[in-house]
Image (cartoon, rainbow, N blue to C red):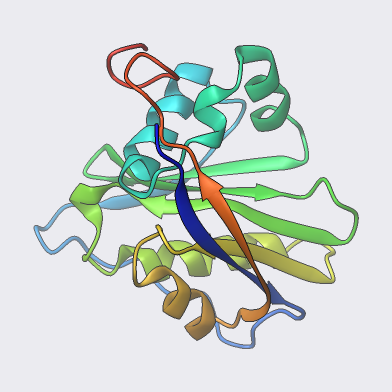
Length: 185
């Protein structure tokens, strides 16, 4: 497959925001929303979330990981995964990585396509920031690239992250039969 050139923007937050976490928006359809921590999620469930959220944005890195490598990352006690449910359906997730001393990396963050545009992103990011700063950290980081949702970078900046570096890279898309798409669970 042809590599896709990307620009990655690295952002950081060096202190806890003063604003209180945003309230969970009430479902426009009258439904309920819940944010729950997923403790050692089954790999199939994690892969479902990763693909459901990341497929439109070419999240491919972890699709190429073997079970042992993926389990080592997502089951690490210093990694926290939280899932947003809307009317009982997984609507998005975020992953906080505390493995670097004094820091938290927002490793993954996003909503499934069915739940974008419903004001859930700001709530979920606010919850991720609050969860990160509830620990003793000095810095929170996140990165985004030119293939991510067009509102990702402005949202990160609006919520208090500041860009500190950029890099160019390439993403090689998943080919049919490679990775763990719906054709290869």
